[in-house]
Image: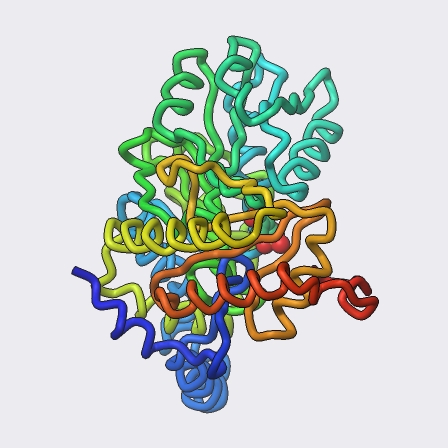
Length: 397
Ligand SMILES: *Cc1c(COP(=O)(O)O)cnc(C)c1O
């Protein structure tokens, strides 16, 4: 069994805070500061450019990728890290569409994150020749899969509602129609058990700064199923995805396997923070994370339902149908969330009316659930949110 008292002690979270926003930005792992400082002094400072060889910087993206692979049901060697999620999504999607040149449709759902939809539409515009993004409601995805489809591109857990897609079933259905799949695991990696190999997923991408706690701007990851990696052409053929970067060939030749999805110089400082963050996951079982996450979210929903009649649950009531977050709707959601944050309960707001709370068992327990529930009940009962200062929108919500 995972020892959550032990994992909690590995994070530096301000005293008295109920931090329910690790689904947006994970908290600081205690060891990250020292790890980054050591990297700067002993590696960058002392080794300078020789650090690429002597400190293993060049292998850092693959090293982190292998450790993430364990958490998402992927074999070693099938995941690499770098760039941002939006860029990794573009790469995966571009590689997938090139493997289905006789088709013209990318299918996604209206619950997907805007950047994913923008990237897909941008790619279609660039490709021209009738390529289009088709967007349907999340519950209509299965019915919209047919043999015009080149790629099914979905985010497994809806960033607003937490609704969970059935990855294995939809992947099997897409394959049955001759299409490939690109899964975005932004709200899955570190949140719920994922079995990419078992589901037969073709491509997957995700970020590391949410449930994996690598810090703001931490590198993204990309998975390519090993049997496809030799045929998947990177749409961003950078020199570090070349088979022999230091041959400085004028002609591009893709590296073996997922390494071809690397683009340019990796973010070594952020990778050092990511490596420290991944240390926390040693000995953590995703099945334990899932069981505890459900306990926490069920207790939160029950407490809110009993005391806040004006908040409407936006997440599936069945825990098996949602990820590791719980959302409620209210027309004054933004002001309510600001009132909560002012009282030490940090969640976030997603337009137009969603109050979002993430449950990360590594560092959240029943105490924070009770604190958040009590504070929310008081804010609602006394109308404490109803102040001009809580309605003033900040740039980042
Ligand atoms: C968080 C998130 C992103 C953000 O992409 P970045 O390039 O890292 O800014 C994209 N897609 C989904 C589904 C997300 O949840």
